[in-house]
Every structure is written in structure tokens, then in C-alpha cells.
Length: 485
Image (tube, rainbow, N blue to C red; front, side):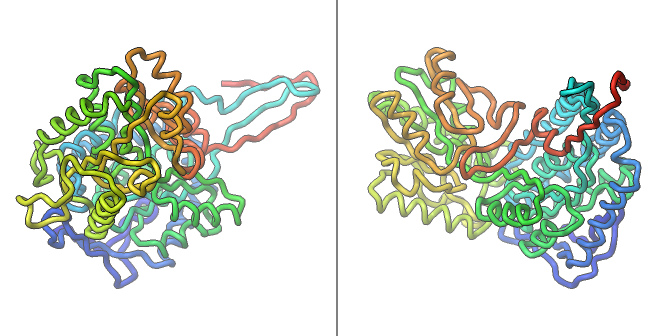
């Protein structure tokens, strides 16, 4: 049992003021595995005040980027010493398989190093030609960040908020999802051991009410949120009322377009990996597979054979591919969508039920539908579960139209006999990221953001870092040219 009675506020462990707690139930055993306190509004106020002081008067925004980077490298080193705890807690709290959690953990250090390199490309002082004389353009930290994160990949997403915010000089207050608050304590311990200055990082537990209090707090300057479209709308409205910048990474209903005649054999790991990884509980999942009508049976047979060879079971085991869904209510949602697909006339060719050998836990078999009409609910709504819908088309224009027939636009994939043809089709799909012939998902290190109801703004790469900076133009005396590092 993981049990704590403290919050991490301003870089220090502080006894919780409130009596309310979150009981974390294991999705695989249905037993309580953790208990942590829920923050009260006064604790949020203290955390924001500490961050405010750190930004207004502390050293952090005034350090050079390489100095901040060294603190973050020490943070990552601290996480490395806690690797087993970081993995085990995520498995216990949200049912992540050891394979999924381990792969994400191993990306943390390269993720930071790439971000540090990207930060080096941003000119913080730049001299430009003005209408009369020279202008000094400054890029300055925007202020105090509120980071609201989801449950489906807690540590990696929390760090995806923390790294760029801190690297650009902005203290941050993070509120993890109430379903997965345990692993965030490992981040807090690593922050503490890294010697990051007072006030720069706080991590507080709570639900929607505490998140709303944090987002609306007058001491917050920028909000970054990953989660549901409904949550994103509420946060966007609160930020608009206060003229506050916000980055929203929301839902998806991404499509994988298989162009005619493609041999999918070498691409099956990429297709299934981007469609069903983490039991489909990933916003960029390519859970619509759009296949030419002449190739459907062949591709479906390959998909079924590939998925059938994957293991459903205990997420703690290193060879398990499919663990449970993160919550009982999430299983109910997924099962309702499966019933909806059948009711609307789609046909299941694999899965569709609960695995017989898993009497405990919130498991759903990976499920593959065929005969799916693009207008069916399973083809339009985000399921957030291990469900694939195979949709057929007759020509490329129809394939693109089906891919774009969605209120979302986050991820996507194209498989083509020639990569350049795949790029051409990818350019026609209205989405923030798209992978060609097994290229990495989520932008592959490039800017990551959504179109339509999939979000606002960008994370990662230079554009993501620049979200935490504000521009200032300083006009200069005639004939004067300032020094630029």
C-alpha cells in the first residue's frame, strides 16, 4: 500500500490540511493500492503564492537556459534511481503494462535532451530592423504555469508540462489526475533531490474543483492541459475570461489510411502499436483503419492474426501487451460503444468481450470491427479503449474524405507503396500530426498539437517551448546597436 499524508508545495513536503483522501484502486486486482490527500483551496493558494514569489523575486527566471537544464538533468537522474517505483506505481494506479510504462520511461532522458537542444535554437535577445533604426526583441518567461494532466500516461505527460515550463523559466503548479496521483510523488522526490529552488515546483492532488480553482487563480499566467474536450472547453473559457494563454491537448479519432496495394506485413507493428497501445487509451490512437475495398479481407486477416498473438493479462508481467482499462467506468464506456457498433450493423471479427481468464480487473478484449459505416458512433466518437474500426473506400478522394469526417484532428497515419505518395495524402488530412509508412507518432519530435476539437496550441519542439515565452519589443536610440549573446 502506497500511502502519503503530505503535499509537495513550493519544493517542500507539507502536511495536508484537509481530511479528504483519494483511494486508488488497482485496475487489475480491484484492490486499494494507494491513499493520498486531496488539496484544499488554501493549499492551492499557498502553492501559487510560492510560485509567484519564485517568478517575481527568485533566481529561476533569471538563470540562463543551460543552468536550468542542469537542474532538470539532475531531476531525471533522480527518476532513474527510482525507475522501479515509477513503473510499479503506474501499473498499480492505472493498469499500464510494464512494457508500456517502461518504454515511456526510457524516453524521458532523450525527451529532455532534445528539448534542451531546441531551447538553444530560440533567440532570447534578437536585434531587428525597425521602421526607424533598430529594435531589440526580447523573449521572456510568461510567468507561473498551471499544469493539469490526465491519467493515461501520468509520469510522461506530467514531465511534458514540467520540462518546457521550467526550461523557459516558468515555475509550475501541477495537478495530476485523481485516478493516477501516486507516481507524481516520485517526480516530487526527484525535484526535491535535484535542488530546484524554492517555490519553482508544486504538485497537488484533487479533482475537478481543485483544478478549476488552480486554473482561475489570479496568480497563474499560463495554463497547459491534456485531457478531455469537455475539460478543455471549461479551461479555455476560464482562460479567455482572464486573457490568459492556454495550451490544450484534447481528444482524437485518428485514421490510418492504407493506400491500395500496400503490403502491410512490415507495418503491422506500427499500425497496431499506434492503434491499440495502452489498451487504446491514448489520444492519438489510430482507431479508424481506412482500407481499399479490394484489400480489406487481406488487411483484416493480417490484423486479426497479429492481435491474436498478443497477450492479455497481468500488467506487471513484462510480456503482457494488453492490461486492464484504467477504471471500471471506462470499461463500461467501452462496452457501451461495442454494443453500439453491433446495434448499428457493424460486425466483430475479433474480440468484443471480457477475457475469460481474467476474472478480476477491468479488462476488455482487443476488438476489431468490420462493415463499419463512417457515420456510425464507433467511427465518430473517441472510445478510449482497445477497439478498431475497419472502414473501406473505393478511391483516394473517398479515403481522404473519410479520414477528415471527424470533429477531431490530432494524429493519423498513411501507408503507401511510395513515401512521396504517402506524404501527398498526409498533406490532405486535416490533422496536427501524421506518420507515413511507420514513422513515429505524436509528431516524432516535431511540434505536437491538434486541429478542430483536438486542441489549441503546440507542445514540443521550438514552437512548444515558445508557448512559455512572451515577446517584448524595445525600441532603441538612433545609431545604437545592443550586444546580443
